[in-house]
Image (tube, rainbow, N blue to C red):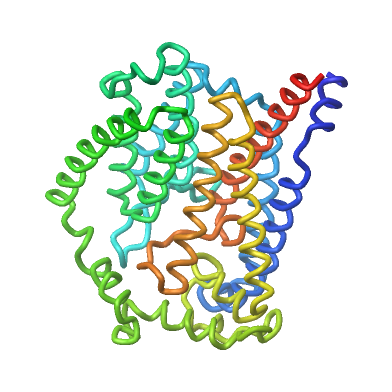
Length: 393
């Protein structure tokens, strides 16, 4: 056991770990700064209400990170483990359908209450699940067949399960998570080593199923583009026309960004967090960072998240293990897509979808699942280093 821990310590990816740690601590500081007024006015609580809750979330997340970091990633290809993870996913989405809750203004039903743990968002778990499930499924197919001979019908079950997950998330209705799940699927399959021709066969089948599901959603869940969701699309093109309605968040985000300038107003000095920008500690925390810290806050956040994405893809490119490559590419694409969607919404580049900023925004489910994902990525990195040293000796 001692020798085992020494080997892990020698090959531990410290730059990646330190980056995640610093981003999480920076996020904790900004959650405290951005949420004080919300805590007092909306919750009738102490100014550090959200800060204290996020400290608890980070403590729980640290245990998840350590467990994932020291659990050999190759076990995720085990059928029994994947069956267990699939059953957990099914239970979560069934629970969500029966007793879920969410933001009534957009008709979402994204959360479940777990006794003793509080709110949990199944779509966050679904992102990590799809990475592990697709990686394991394509890894096993690659062991059994050559990818050149692989037919789309032979990967029916991964496609079907992916469609089911996307449909469940779309019914919540969490459209930001749907986009991320699509990006994850593309990245994992692309990293599998599948030939270009077979890759397009796969996505032809995927697209056919996806179109059918979207048609059913449109038929039975037509309110996806009605009411406030339709307003979000319209306000995207001209948010100032809807400043008192669905464009309110984006307009006040613009005020925050513009008010910060290059150097920012100073930590804790945001004006927009004083009741103008709703929920500044979650989806729009980057606007508060820009207002208070200016370009330096942008450099910290984008630099740190960019480094994580870079590390994930560099690990995927270095490793010779297809399973490791798919897992690393999937996690890197997840962080990249989620960062882009959040920042795109904050800056008005894309319509709002309600996606948190990784490691920075307030949220228990998000930080816990992301920490587990980082533990898995660090485990992949450690084994890649070990195998590389073996091949060089």
